[in-house]
Image (cartoon, rainbow, N blue to C red; front, top):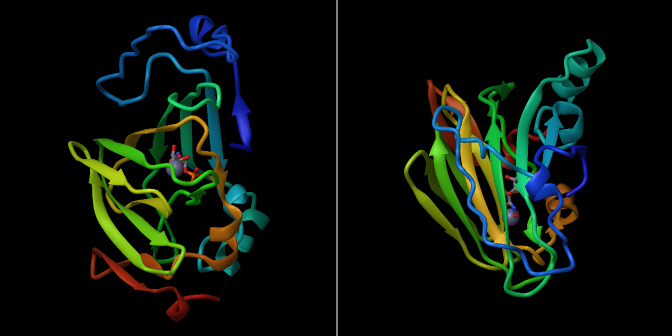
Length: 210
Ligand code: PAN
Ligand code: ZN
């Protein structure tokens, strides 16, 4: 994953030799925040990193011009070498908020090396996982504290925070999966999640695109 990456957080994890098999390890999740107490990299995604993703491009432009560039989400990664049979772990903290009527979300991606499935474990907050396959079929499932979502191979996936607090989830995926952001950036998801009458609603992305 590219982006603003902060290294050097944990000595044990960061000295892991990526060319060898990983050693046994366990990581505690902070009970209050859900964030792993040890991780190798922290990735920060701000509004400027999501330019072109939200439907109200104009509002994004105006906010950035005024110097408003909020953090949308952070990812705490424990990666492994991209070898068959290894899993990477990543904990995402997706902030609450909206751009216009559209709730904050993660960029969303297909896995580059298919087939690669993934498991999302909801740790805090309330939200949704939006999925879309290469044929354009769309699906959505709740993603919230206490549930587990299985993402099958060949489905692009995007997390959306529809709650008032942070949405925190742990992802477990093959370390060789890779991330294809380009396809989703180009075509977008066919549906958007917006607030309507105080509640989340799915609408066609064509009806809001500006
Ligand atoms: C997750 C995501 C994470 C950030 O770990 O990478 O939530 O979302 P984007 O990668 O779409 O910006 C995952 O799905 N890994 O495969
Ligand atoms: Zn993924």
